[in-house]
Structure formats: C-alpha cells, structure tokens
Picture (cartoon, rainbow, N blue to C red):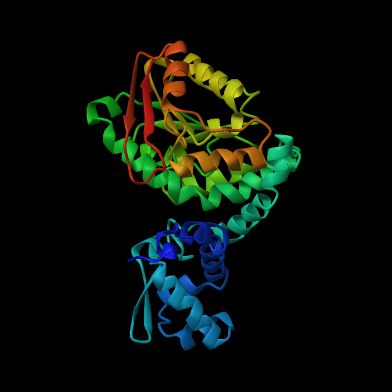
Length: 338
C-alpha cells in the first residue's frame, strides 16, 4: 500500500523554476565569455587544452564542459569535447552567424528580471526609457547578437514565397532593420532588388557592415532616424517588420501596420515576425514570458495574438493573410498582401 507521502505532488517543477532554472543561462554565458566554443573550433579538445586557452583552472573548466555536454551544447567522447551543430554555427567567433555579445546581453537582461515583482506592482518598467543615445547604444549591442535568429527565419520566408511572386519584389523597406537579418536573404535571392533600411544612425553603421559582409551592400540605401517620425515613402513591394511591433505597443504597433500598408505598392507584401500567444493567452509560455520582458524594459511593449494581427491587417486594407511555420522562429511568421 502506497505511503501517503508518495501521493503528494512532485516538487520538481517548482524546484526547476525557482532553485536552478536560471543556471543554464549563466553556464552558457560564461562559456561564451571564456571563448570555450571558439577554442574547441580552433582545435582544443581536452579540458586542459581548453582551460589553457582561457587562462582558467582545469578542474573548474571540466565541470563547465560536462554541464555544456549535458545541455547539448557539446558532445563528449572520453576526455575529448566537440561542438554541437548549434554551437558551431552561432557561438564560435569566426562563424558567419556568430551571436556577437550574446553572453553580456543575456546577463544584463537577467538582472532586470530581479525587479519583476516591483514592476508588477507599479505596472511600469522600473528603468525609465532612455534617450536617443541610450537607445542607440542598446540596439547596437542587441542587433548583433540576434542577427542569426532573424536571418535563418527570413530564409524560410523567402523559400515560402513562390519564385514567380518573388520576381515581383523590386523595392524592399526594412523597418527597424538593425543588422538587416530580415532583408539580406531577400537581397541575396532576388538579385535585382534594392533595399532601404530605416533605423537610428548608430545602428545603420552596423547594417552597412553586415550588408557588405553578405555581399549585398551595393544595393542598400538608408533612412536614418526614429521609425515613428521618419516618412517611409512609398511604392515598396515588400516591407519587413522583424520583431518591431512588440516594442512599440498596441496603439503604435497598429499604426505601424497602417503606415506599412500606405507605403506598399498594389499587391505589395508585409512580412511580420513576432512572439505570438494563442488567442486565449494561455500559451505558448515563451511568447507570454516575452510579454513580461516587455513590461520590464519598455513603456508600452507587449505581445499580441494572431486574432489581433488579423484584425489590424484587415483594417489597414490587406486582402490576404497567411502564416509561415518555421522552427527558426518562436511563432509563425505573418505574410500579408495588400
């Protein structure tokens, strides 16, 4: 007969979330800071060799490496370590898709979460919005480390559009383009397309760097300034809003959709990438937690449901709306035609 204690609910979910839920973030961040992944890529294989390159203690390094193997960032055979495909692609400095600055950005974001209870009480972020210089400095770090996320997802979007439909895309506007992950795959595939990137001047310097790196810089032009104030112009065949609306909030986000519609040519396309909760806001957990991240770090930012996006798009005059499912994005991409 089972003992009464055996019928108690397991405490493991609570323990995982509250006792050690954030540990993996700091383990991976420390490994990036110590150049563990780049060291392995350059030929270091044992804990001793990797520790030597990092000027670190071998025994402590072995514990980090074993944890990374358990987290699937590394593989281990005997005393030798190798990279997972994800680590090789995104955490090695020499990789084309290196998430530059991801370690420091991850740790800085975690610090803000320590004040979540206070933010919930006030309903506002505890850190006041920065000035233009502060925003530019923040985004100059962010756009480098999130570049691969958008780039891989945008490749899926390109593939989901038929060659005949792609051939009609000649002018592209990349709003809040950052390092241009959402437009570079289109420019690479559609050789005649020209891209205009709208972003803050310090950020467009990074756009120029990445556009040149991926061989499309000669077809890029720039609108520099605040996306809420700069005139988009018109006649575009494609506009991308790659993770822009969540930072704008409900009213400004809806207006951004309207302005995009106004700037598109007839039958032009709008591509939206976002964290999208289900219509009842009961999941997915990642999308809902991202909304909390917006509460912590922005005055008005939030996440919005597919139903809300469809309502905004239809009100703005878009005739067809479809989604593109891809494992490279946290939620389906939205592709709307004017």
